[in-house]
Image 1 (cartoon, helix red, strand yellow):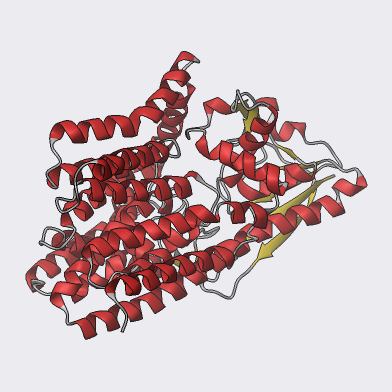
Image 2 (spheres, one colour):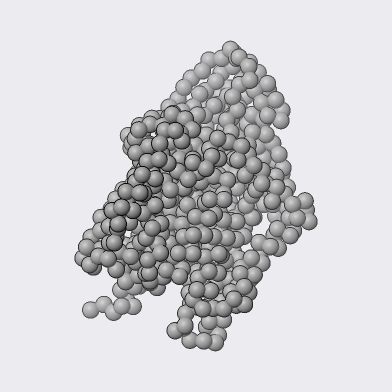
Length: 540
């Protein structure tokens, strides 16, 4: 017969194996989203490690000093530089180098859940399989480091504030371990402040005392404070970069409160899926309150609040996801094990989503674990072990299938940009033709690596294009520069399709906006439109 300790060890091993599986399934995924924003800094660090941001980059349509567009502390870039040195930039090698962070995050998730849940394994596996977690943690981006470090900071905090933990050296070590991990998290991503706030609130609620919690928070902020102070002495570009992105986003129609609220509710419900489903299985649901929630969701997603044409299927998806999320908000005040951690963590994560320049799965990721674990605790109280386990097992199957499908579509989107760049290079660059690209992400990275150039508004944009040149114009991308004059050209259209009827981003009317609610109010959309479309413009 297994002891409790050996059973927990096997469950931890299962969580680690599952986390490794989610990474290894897409180990050779093309560089995607903002990965190409951080890789140039890593390459520059290899040449000039003391000045990581002393170069120019065209990422928003014109070449500017990197310091003016980077709103991320440099820890990730230094780690990427080391990985580049080892792997020469091969995608599978780079992702393998960062696999330990995935395993560390999974282990910390299990330890946190096991503190308060009777049956922690299935909820942890569900978190790992959610679209928000699976896809974003697979990227070489700051969220991977911030979550891995911050989660271990919370693990240490629980030990430090545990009244049953032996005092003395052990608790002091847990204090410094916890605050040190939080410092690393904040040096990875400013958004990790949500984890710091959650930890501080949990420490106070668990009786650690204001002075000790304040010291813990100060130590946790020390590394970031030192970085920002150094940046301020050099001109304060970090704050200006963050403000630039926020200011530009606030000028867009998608900054409307109705669109942001739609996005926040739909992203939390769809980013984890069970956050929209499990609240409906809780006891003590008042039919009158459910009716009020339904009316609220129908009004929020009603046509008179649309910013443009919205398909019926997207409207229905948004209403369904938002309905479950609002019901979740009504249930979080119920007492449950771990509430002193889950509730402030969820609140801090949602606060970051609310003030960030855009709602996106990367920021909602911070709120996914506490929402899932809080609901799991409530279900343990409301359902029998048999019914609860059956519900969680069915939920895991559903979430895994959805997460895998969306990760597959996303990998196909990224691969289409890499393969197109290689095709254009062999067809045109090898013949001595000049090739330009507008748009960014992986398309820009791979075409520039092959010898292409990015259109630059600072140099005239399309005015630089000459007869005989080739311009690659994507539709599903960001900051795409359109021609400012009529051109005589031969235009070929290349589409990438997928039989999976899900889209994270859309080129047509659907509302998929996984990487930013600027593109749509849903984390994914039911659609069979092309995953990506590129125009190959040969100027005559």
